[in-house]
Image (cartoon, rainbow, N blue to C red):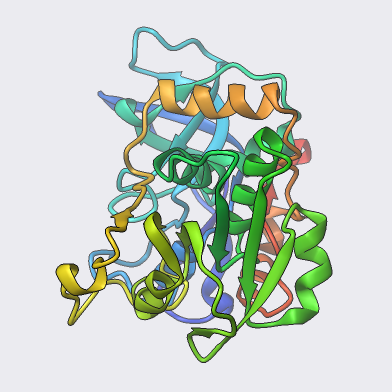
Length: 321
């Protein structure tokens, strides 16, 4: 089979497409024939050597969509459509950047869907994160919602899900580049605010905020939260993972609520609920860019660039069989 192997940390050039043995089935695991996977910023961080627990060589990939090839799990059928995300996939063991991968039985999630394959591949883990954040923000039609880091895959996914259910809600996005304003409005944002040096160039307040930039500038985000509002911080696009010098009493003094969504909190029921939501509200979840496995370096380069916008996936073509 073909697999993308990272032997040492570095830039996109360390992603090597190689021929290697197909994994051998073992007790407690399932062999998955991969149909495609999304590219995530966390995989870029790992590729760069910023995930201390990851040892190289490693096949990256914290998600995949595929078919059951072989399994030791009694309730699964050969050829069954599945999704897998998170766990230690692509970190403690090889992940989705391959034609086949061996995964623990407990993180195989069989699903039912009428979505086309490219749309299905785009769902995990981006839309799952966006959907979980949408639920945790407890959004109502009267809310005024801000997405910080709006041009990211999760930001755009969130906009599409939100506007799919509540088309009249007022949705604002932030970007460091106003050249993307038209693109953001095309996916559902009503207004775009410039972010400059970690500060929003506005004094507007919002009842609900999805913060995908993360700890680096979260205090500035909280500054724009209305009394009694909710902020959901579930991204680290700012490159900082944890909060320092954060006094909850002071920072949350306006009786506001800080929450998050952890995409490792996953189950069959939650994934199927997302799929059903997308189908019910006819949300357009098609990816922005589709690459082949051999184009993995280009896919990473694009996602890291200032031109990237939305979900980037790799689709495994049938010619590889």
